[in-house]
Length: 185
Image (cartoon, rainbow, N blue to C red):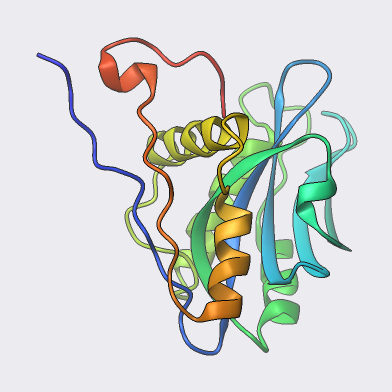
């Protein structure tokens, strides 16, 4: 029997909020780098991430324009919404999430997962998000990227403009056909 899994949920951007997306980037070493991003517009994207190496990990909050123009971008997952006046508060809240330098069990992806839990405590991320679900959603959006379909970033921009949620193209992963997935996202 083939296991069945629910499709990628269409979650809307709440009134007076900006979407928070977990974003995946491909690195030259074959690993994946995750960031949290608040999408205000295509020209204003707030990023929250860990940079550095095991001995120098540092929390960085930055801004960029047009995520589609970042060559290493491989899709993402809508994880919540932040009040439009809450980006500065989010930046501060994420300084509270612990960075574990020199710990072999810890990675910047662990920090992102901890951030999502931390933001859930104040109601800014969706309930029911766990690591397995997020990795699967990242894999699905990476497949959409490979198929040149709209990724979560493009869908969020469309919703910000139209005010209406945009459903993702349905993607079935090999893991959903009883095979194991081939990458982190």
